Length: 359
Image 1 (cartoon, rainbow, N blue to C red):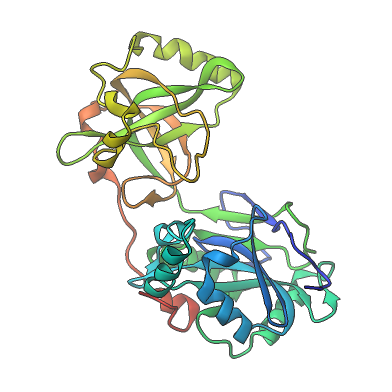
Image 2 (tube, rainbow, N blue to C red; image 1 turned 180 degrees about the horizontal axis):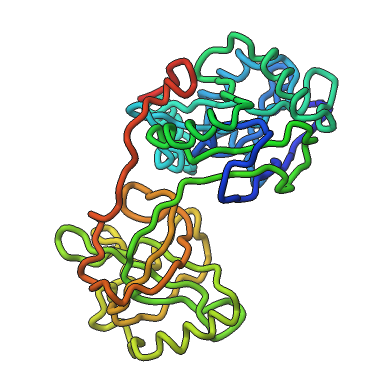
């Protein structure tokens, strides 16, 4: 492979803002795997945000990209999987599997799509120093008439239309809106764009904590919700506290600390088999690796409100939740999954303008 922009490329990023800023190029924020695709003739490499190659996990996309992209190019975009008319992030995570036979089976059952939104190189020319407006024009021309499973990301310059997209597209599983300055040059790994994401809140039981890596202060709070059977299920953590707040939390939680996990709803967390029938802290998976997952048990008597964006498999927060406030007015038993709402459905085909690959 010999391209004017060579792998690895760390994608340009966006920083969170509360409102959609004016005077920019607006696109939907896709809920998938960020991917930079390199094509040089018959060679295809798909790089991830962390520069880890994704090529082997999406064999069906390798074939589609070879057919549909310009013969020599570097394209920034997102890998997504659609199911029942909306994006399905959980189906994407299943692809990161060590067994090639499993990957190929899933490629047939839940084929992926690629949504292109930036062009970094075309034929023998690097485009990183061109303004976004020019890169978008070249991308649209290069992908004119492209067919599924490769898509050109919809774009608008109308802030009011972007606001409508923000409300409407959530029902198709999209994350929000990305606003991009039109004169923006492509700068790897820099947060020069802006994202406005959907946010929900939930009241959760605080049932434990982990120490911060710096010492004996709170690193994260372990959160739980009660299921229909009255079992407290671990749904994730909240973190991102200042060091002062971490020390304060140690004092606030001291009356709830237990000498051991005996009698705690998550007492069986160290038993690997127990994780098969309940959601407990400390589960080892391909993402956690060798990370220290030990935790300190608390009597499940305090409730806090947290902000979150997505649920994974409808059972736990996909990302770290953000602490908002204590809720002394809420009884722990009232913190159930029933409080979690879902947006109104919206067909993903209406976003892309053509039917995406779906299962």
